[in-house]
Image (cartoon, rainbow, N blue to C red; front, side, top):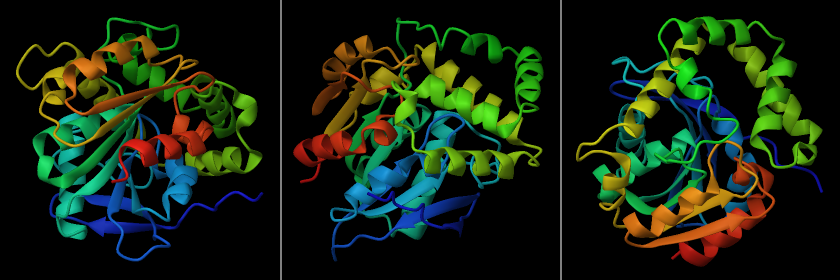
Length: 296
């Protein structure tokens, strides 16, 4: 069976930023809209297969967050989860008319989606978090180095050095880290990711966007105030699905025990043979769970 081709990007010119967006039109008239938010270092390409599966049920929009994919950085420079969420809110209000949408987020995108659903409950019809980057006491073998990269000066040197590696090598390293079974990744998807990486190599802000977003995310991990992520979770009013992968080297699935303590209407699914990007590795299982818990 042939794989769906990524939908073309278009630019949404908003009041405070420009966002590059891929639109997967629904095959069913009158269905709700959905917005998809990628993780750190990712892009709207990360949602192609799940967006295709959801076409009968939603009118889908995958966003390149500011500084990622083909979106320039936001003009205010705010790349914290709350700052990125403000950009997604702006898109929903200005481009989609402000109607509530199904919100999907992976990793950093999960942290952004939580900010959106908690701060603007009127815009979230449902919330689906896939390996969300939320504060956890569980370190893993692949995320312990992130605080080191976040150190000013150190991070700049490490990321700039990493970006000098060939795009194919960088993509392979990402796949090896994020997938429970890297052999599942079709060659077509590897080629698409390599082409995307090469298209960003000339962008002077690529390293800065990564580091600003990482540092903003890690600051939420030590926030003890009323806007800390798990406190925000208690403000989410819509149905919530949280998907973890048992083979995820970045987000420990043991964090799932906190979800039902803090979200009011939460369902948790742990996929036994999935890694960090279940929407790419097992889109059919994510779609099945979403259909069961969030579609209506």
